[in-house]
Length: 112
Image 1 (cartoon, rainbow, N blue to C red):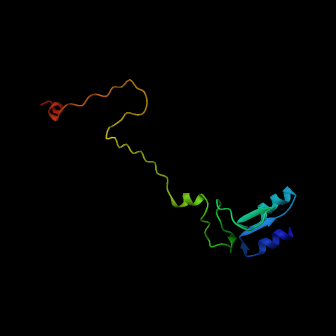
Image 2 (cartoon, rainbow, N blue to C red; image 1 turned 135 degrees about the horizontal axis):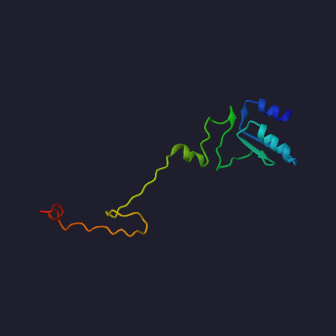
């Protein structure tokens, strides 16, 4: 109790660690500590490149811009279907429909 309270009373919260063989203590630490990174039975040196880096409270630079989530923050999904053959196509399924042939010229189209 005292260790978690002391750590949480500090103005910074970049990284934290606990060394224990008691999984319940580790779970409690993970849930109660106010830090951007929590290490269980591991050092606080380094960062996880695939995760947002930064702390809580007065730690870090105010941004957590790393990891795969930054892609979602700065991009938008866009579906693109580019048909460059110049032909209109039926849906890609088997049907009994046969497309009519186009007239040979405009005169035929207009019935002149």
